Image 1 (cartoon, helix red, strand yellow):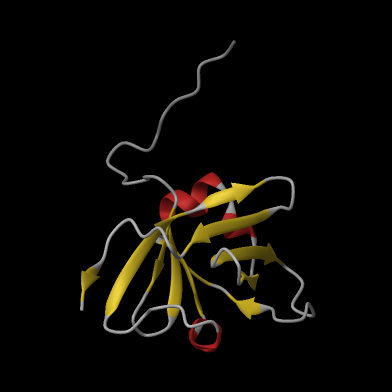
Image 2: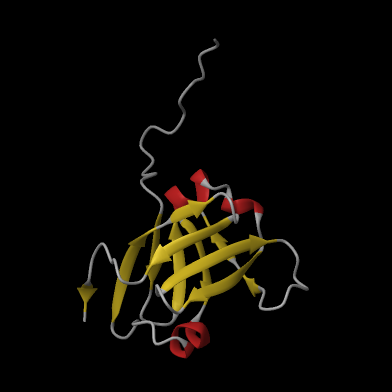
Length: 124
């Protein structure tokens, strides 16, 4: 087995976290971006399970897919507009940023977070 040099010293690459910002955007941190190689995608499809109130994110490069939303990429993570989506399903995002753990459903190839299980509630 060959050793691989670690070049990430000083970088804050933590657990994959998704944030819903008060201005109606959804952001995924660098941990999510790197772990799931999300920098390779340009669009996201937003999904919602009304029974469990979980949000699904399906990443794609096909801008012709119904519901495709353009992703903004930064060194610290990715984000996209989701105000209409959040309002349509009554997902709280007024006056605060709420964070959730992001999981990957390998079978369905979507990333999921549970709006009923925030990991913080700051602001507001």
